[in-house]
Image (cartoon, rainbow, N blue to C red):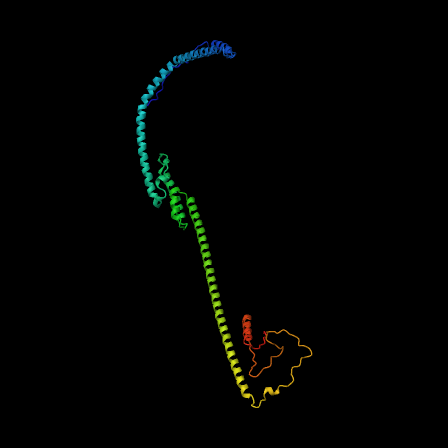
Amino acid sequence: MNKLQIVVNQKPGVISTNFEEIKAELSARMDIYKELEVTEENKPERKKDIATLRKMKKALDDRRIEVKKEYLKPCDDFEAKVKELTALIDDPIELIDNQVKVFEESQKLKKKQDIKNSYQELIGEMGEYIPLDRIYNSKWENVSVTMKTIREEMEDAISSTVMAVTTIKGMNSEAVPQALELYKKDLSLANAITYVNRYEQQKAEILAREEQKRKEEEGRKRRAEEERIRKLERKRVAEEERIREEARRKAIEEERQRVEAEKRKVEEEKARNSIQEIPADIPSVKDDIPEEPFFVEPEEPFAEESFSEEPFEVEGELPFVTVGEVKATFTVVGTFEEIEQVELYLNSIGLFFERKDA
């Protein structure tokens, strides 16, 4: 197509006016208004001045518009003709542009399908984590972006996801399923790891509290069992002590009864022996009574001494053993209270005894 060029012969327009004359006259008139003052009396006159000045301004502006319109007539005629020419060009532009758009849309649809096919080839098991719309980049549809570049970007995203999922699954925690769900939402490995670590920390704290509680409970049960055993032991010891005390008291009572029986037996035997030994020719006691009183008052009265109910003891020797009495030595082993019980019993039956602590 030959190059078209529009030829224009343009002469700059000239507008002549008495600008300087009008300017000088207006400046002189305007100076008069600058010195005027508004009062209550001249306020109507000042309002008339304002109206007069506005009419002068409007008259000048109307003249400007009229001159400009007349001056621009050649330009307006030229502009209309140029628009008529450009309209002739717009029809093929629109036709070709529509065809280009249809072609580009067809190419874009084909490229979208190629992108989907490449995604299906590469995604493998990572589809649930990174569906195509999560990694899709609209610039991939541009003609300037090749499928090689698109596949490389997909491979990088999939490889990063495989590494992240493998890392999360390798953390060996009960929180891994929840961490994977969290990763699906934001594709942030750092957030998933933080979630698992926080879960494990909380789990460790809970287990530590439970372990401490279990130890405290075991300690409480152990102390309760020890206390129960101590109570049973004290009860057993008390019961054994009670049984021993009853046996001791029973033995003391049996011994006392035996001693009393022996004593009665000895006394009865002594009585029988005494009756048998009395001679038949024993003089009467009445015949031996002197005529004079036998009692002679001593020159000095006997000193009164206090009588002690304690058993009579002679240091270094036992009392004289009479007929029928037997002297015996016992060695008694017992507590202080038991020894006192023995002494009380010996006192109660009237036996003489001497205590020597070993």
